[in-house]
Image (cartoon, rainbow, N blue to C red; front, side, top):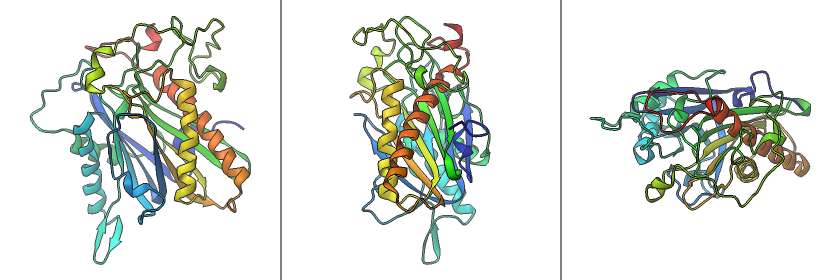
Length: 331
């Protein structure tokens, strides 16, 4: 197995990602969409999620396809980014058909980035327009690190960011991950530049520093985000996708498995102060005949891609004015 051409979630054929950000506010929006509507489900494992339309993604509910997924900064304000994307898709005549009306289905999740050094004294909620701009910027290639919804992201001791990774399997199957890294926990081993995800690195994609040899799993480093506990100022949100044909229940299991990658890459993860969640997406290109072994492999590879994407998001972060935390590259 090896990464796809761009080592991005858009190596899954048909998927596109768009970013938009406001560097003064230190926030942004990332939109995942596709040439055609796609199957999606979601699994939430953090204790403080912020979401929109995720109930529709449960396997027992009616709507089977979605038109886009929105990842946004801004906490509750950021959920308005999905309204901008919904409006823009409606103007294009896309969405779930209900008689003469089309209703775009646009699930969304947010991270808290309101105390990261940016100017949050806006006169009008900026996220609707950021959502529209991110959708308009959709492409097969996009920036990582301090970009899109990762613009204002932070970890326990470093800037976070937007990450992505992919993996090619046999028979044309592809798995990819997209993630906004904004956890309470740390992506690096305390006192080092070694990523927790180092055992899964491919082609030095996040620096090639290697695996730490001296690890105390119970050591608690100084956490620069402690002041934000009451505000639930954390959360890592992401998407795993494949071109294998999955139904909603299988997409749900796919997203559940991907959480293993989050736990491998962030310590601690899934805390009461994080709203950690992962969407699972299928573009239904290749029939796997409901093979349970193949489904198991897809979930495992999704977890590996998620771990790698998290490390890449932190690795690719870049410095900006008024940052409250340093970048990995300057540590």
